[in-house]
Image 1 (tube, rainbow, N blue to C red):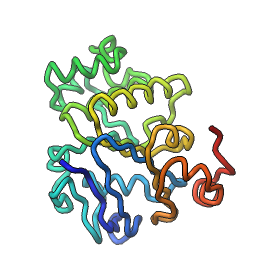
Image 2: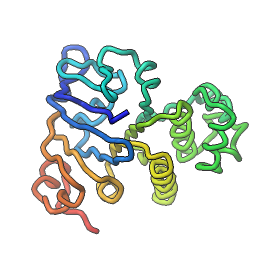
Image 3: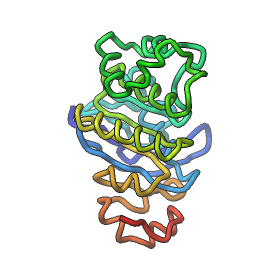
Length: 235
């Protein structure tokens, strides 16, 4: 697969358009960040690729395959994994059962435990009994059960302590590097995005107002202030 792409995508829910004319291509191994204030359209952009939002104009593609009219399960089989902001776990199932429900084999689970040793320690615990950080680890592990080529992460650090956030990001870095995954990271922690990602898109009111390298965005205080609400980024 050459990559995934949003080609002139406008999308939303029902009669409401949330994002307009989004263009982005992500190659295997590439790390893309998406920044913007709450309500800017970041989650809708990911949902347009995974099947959760209605595409009103344009197409989403995986390689030369048009995914625009396919159901979410077919997009998953096309190599797209997603870690939603809501943490995609079953609270009434154990860690083992959650991973099995995600279609994981014994080898897949072993890989997940190598990435997140804490999950192996919690194997028999219910999802509801896990800490916020452990739930996020389980959500990421579930997304890996189908062996995706591309991983879409929607605010994976939300609600986590700084220490747990560091652990989760370290695991994401290792995962993306070891498997050469294409990654799209939506996150409110701007410094984390700039440190992790090769390129960044900034959304404002559903439209792209900046597209370029992380280093280039560091030199654009006008974009940081108007679209993100920051006066600058250290580092």
